[in-house]
Image 1 (tube, rainbow, N blue to C red):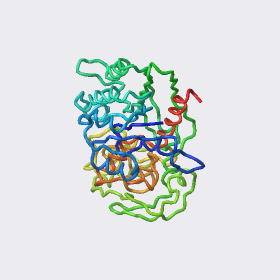
Image 2 (image 1 turned 180 degrees about the vertical axis):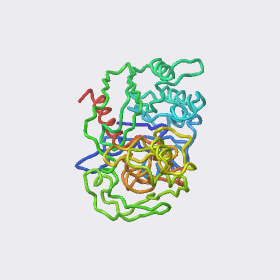
Image 3 (image 1 turned 60 degrees about the vertical axis):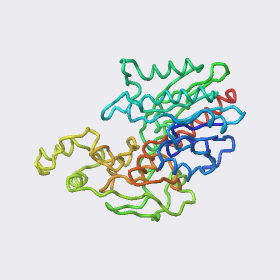
Length: 373
């Protein structure tokens, strides 16, 4: 299978085609050749190169990716599959939604389809794209699917939740899959299962931390198969750093129990148990929340260490999640490398497709391209 990865980020989707899961270990997938990847962010592209050193990385804005460059890299063979999706910030339901230049980057994706003409593509984005409208109040998802159809692709879409694919996190994303109409390809979305890994299943073996501290040495043995998979032969931790918080956030953290959040904290103020000066006057019901040990994590984003933006307080320790814990919850193994400052690393983790979900997608793509075998 020859593959091109667009908007690759740090390589979560790439991981699922570069590696396969065999006997509880990640092993190199010899059935896939990733011809090249494209990513605009310098730090994400650098991290991609650290993990996939044998893949050609084009670190530039996709708008400046020329047809001749692509043709030279591809050569005479066909491309079976394009993976990846444009940045999702414009489509998110949190904050201001804009049909801006980022939202219209699907046009560049379509330009790539015209040049490369893959047999299939897998396009990923946030669930907010389902309700997004363009400048004429027309459904963005419908517009994108219509454009794909005009380029000669049969299109299907489905919302997949990462929690159904062995990932300890509720994370819903829209996947649009296109197959060329001139080829007999039958695509079926991967079936999940009812097994649920909890956040405790995912990270309980990682060292406990105080705020502002970091640890690079494991202090416990892995206690389950998921932890063994994530650690494998890794000996040292990176990015297991706990952010420092101010007085107000720390007051929230010390008073919030598992599963509670902003409304529960303000109720303590109403009952006279916490001073009025700490009342939370902004945020969503899910913010300032402590995670529940025996449930999967909520969606990991670049705000994984910011309680005012997300439910991200550790289920038993008085701090927010660390970037490495976020990576674990996303299903990145501990040996996977990131690059840049802490903000860039958290963005790389939070924006990625979970590797284990990508592995499930690879399995279905292989079946489709092999005639269902």
